[in-house]
Every structure is written in structure tokens, then in C-alpha cells.
Image (cartoon, rainbow, N blue to C red; front, top):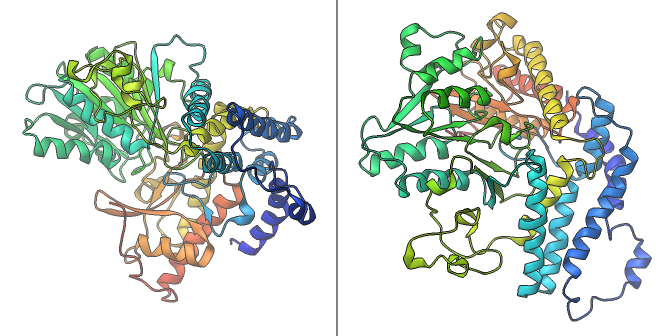
Length: 541
């Protein structure tokens, strides 16, 4: 079982050294007392970028001792060194195994946010904010391009920083209709019933309130806790939660696509059933039916998980959040649009404001009364006031994921590691669930675990599973937090109340085995009436 005191001891031993290496932290109390006060006026223009780049250089130097680590996905010693160097586990009061919701931020991200906030406290002038804009929307987005495998591609894509996946999804939802690309009386949109609500309920809401036709929104359905569907179910557009092959996903999806389908909008990996869609095959299959279709992949559960290689996959747009799997800053996301098909021009922005240079569209030749706006990423970036400290910190997340800090780290190695943690989660569930489900076997796992277990290529590291009859998933989540200090999630999905664990690069292999053991310990205690029920009635639905 999880021993939080053991964790704290290791965290203090390993985390304190990492803290001491942060710029400006490694000094004695005597030096602190002798430190000179900050000057009354801010430094000269140009110093903000210099301070930011010095901070980056410091983290780059600190990563050099790890140069021999090749980071094979199952090399636990090397990944534990990475975890303890880049995460402040000594300061954690709980261990998050909940990347599908929220992750702790990397130390370089946290320290960069603190640095930029300090700069802003000293100087909020336009010249200062201009430097910060260069750091985030200039240098930072260039690093994100490398992260996405787009650094060598032609400039036929757009990248913008938005608030989160929710905002990115809603930009897509609103803009598609407003622009006139989609005619709700003639055309149709395909959604998946285990999409995130901002990519499912949002469409249903628009249909209900804007007088769309009955067939305007078509739904790919999921038969939960099933390996097969009937032929009639397949014809109606239903797939099993544990597909036996990618064809079990592609075939029912294609039953719903026709020449009037203007948009296919899917969660690339579902936070509600754990399935990782074969997106490249879906793109190819859908384009075989209609070229004039926009394919949006909600990437809240794949940004920071997969080596996305967007230019090769061919989706028209994605939305993602830095606060989930990438372990980046909170309250900022990414929106990508592929321009080869004129994707961005199909969309009218739902927010009209000004950009990082305090310019409106009119400053670029797009007068408001003309009804036009920039045919580039600015149409998604005219958001007005944003948190400069958060935006600049996205640069740090991108540099981490592309090996600028920790040598040899690549998006492909991150993907392999997260998938390996998923393998460990599956093994732990297979070993532990028989203790609370006597009828559980590897062959019947699909009846208890919503995440695909037959085909490991159809999942990554999002695992949703049942609790026994009479044991509330919300209660288990609360007790696991209070008794074992693990943060997990509970969801209500298609009438099923489920638990969810989702480990990522902030986790160790021990975290994965311990959290599953903690869940089973709590369920057994609840069965024995030594832990209370009905203590947490709320669940994300």
C-alpha cells in the first residue's frame, strides 16, 4: 500500500536538491539578510527577455547531468530521476494520478511564472509586455511547432494560445455556424457520445436553441462494457467499448458520414471511456467519402500524450490544455488549424478584441465595418487581456517536451512512457480487481473496465472502471484521497458511475500500483462497513 511518509521522505531528500538549483533560491540566510533591496525603477527595455533566456539557460545546464539517460519506457530508475528533478514532490500533500483532469506543473514552468509575475509587478509598461509577447507568442509558439513536428513544414497551419480546450472547442463550435460553412437545415455534423461536453452537449444545445433540423447532428454511439455490437447496431452507428480491431471503430463511423457531412468532431482519446481513436485511419476514411469536411480532434487527452505529428495525421484542427498531460501552466491552451484545406477561413471568430501588441484587426487592414478579419492565427488570438506569466510559461513546457532541458527527451519517448504507465495500470487492475469482483478474469475484463483492454493500440493511459454494486464511485474517490492521499476522479458516463485513473510523466511506476491498491483497499473497507458511504454525492456527468 501507499506509504505517504515514505513518499515525503524521498521527496524531501530528492526535491530539496532540485529546489536549491533554481535561480535565486540557492543562497544562505546570511546572504538573504545582506541582500540589497530591489531598485525603485524597473530595469531597461530588453531585460525581461534577457532574464527569461537566462532562466532557460539555467535549466538547460541543470539537465546536462542526465545526458546519459536514454529514457526507455520501462527504465524506472531514469524516469524516477526525471520525476524528482522536475516536480516538487516534497511539497505535494497528495499524489495526482489524474492527468485527464489536472497535473502538477513542472518546476521550470512554476519558476518561470513566478519570474514573469515579478517582472510585471515591477513594470507593466507596453514595452515590457511587448517583450513578454515575443517570449510567448513568438519564441514559445515556435517551440510548440517543434513539439508538434511542424518546424520543418510549410507555413500552412495556424497556432494560437487560448484559455483551454473548452475555449478552443467552443471557438470551433461557434465559428463553423457563424461563418455559414455549415447549413443546419441541409448539412450534418458527426459527434461521439463520449466526447467531452464542450464537444458534444455544446452541439446539442445549439441544435435545440437555433432551430436546426432533426438530422443536423448525428451521433456515433458507444456500447459500454461490450466487445461486440450487432449488425443492426453497427448500421445505426454504434461501436463497442472494447473493440477487437480498428475496423470496429471505422465501420460504424462511416455509416453516419455522407456527402452532406460538414464536420466530424471527435475526442481523439475519450476522457469518458478511455478509447484512443485510430485518428489517421479515420481521417483517410472520412476524406474518402467527402473532401469538403472539417475534422476536429479534441486533443485534451492527447496533447502531451501522443507524438502528435499533426502534418502527417491530417486533422483540420485540435484543441488542447497545458494543465493536463503536458504538466504545463494552468489556464492556457492551444488551438491548431491546418490551412491546406482553408480550414481557418471557414470560421468566424466569436471573440473580437486586440492582440499581444494592443492592435485590433483594423490595425492590420481589416476594418470592423468590412466584416472581415485576418486569415491567420490572429482570428483566434484577438482575446484582449491574458495572463502574461502563464503564456510565457508555455514556452518552458514546450522546451521540456522537446529535450532542451532533459537531454534525450522527445515527444515519442513521452508517448512511449505514458503508454507503459497504462500497461502498468492495466496489469495492476487485472491483479487487484478480482479481490472485489470474484468473477473478474482477464477474458471478462471488458465487463468491468470501460477502457479497451483487448487492443492496447486503442488506449493510452486513461482507465475507467466500475465499483461493486452499492459502492459509490464518488465515495471511493473521496476515501482514497483522505486515507491514502491520492487524487483520482469519478465520472458518471451513460448511466454508469465510474472511477478513473490516468497516470502521466509526473508519476512513478510505484504510484500506479499503489493507487490501484488504494482503490481496492477502500472498496474492501466500504464493503466491511468500516468506511462510510454517501459521503460524496457529486460526480462529473
